[in-house]
Image 1 (tube, rainbow, N blue to C red):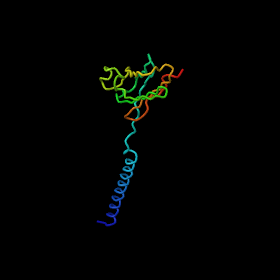
Image 2 (tube, rainbow, N blue to C red; image 1 turned 45 degrees about the vertical axis):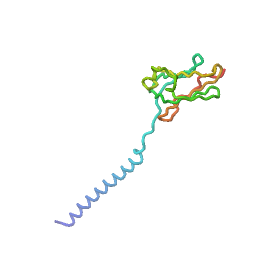
Image 3 (cartoon, rainbow, N blue to C red; image 1 turned 120 degrees about the vertical axis):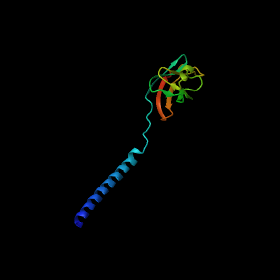
Image 4 (tube, helix red, strand yellow; image 1 turned 120 degrees about the horizontal axis):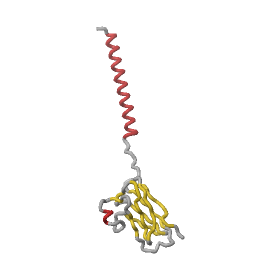
Length: 143
């Protein structure tokens, strides 16, 4: 056997091995940099309408993703702030709470202890899973 030919064969094997190792290192670096981070949670896509009805503040789910009963609501009546979770107490009807979700057509009704006529009312709804604001708006302007 010729030593010159065997060196050539070994060189080709070493070159192919080095290229394979380099490709694996580059792909590992790409994986570690881009793919190892968890994807960011996007807020739920939801359509909420806020309005007043008979001195009550009503938030109605009008479409999109269902929300958990632990969704946070903050109401600002003039300068007074009230915070609650939609599943708390009597904000929703029991039949609507039975499935554990706030879904299309269901309403959250807040009965303020003061007359809200001629008071500014704002509402903020925050999704606790993504910690993002999913609704904010002025429900009633000061007259």
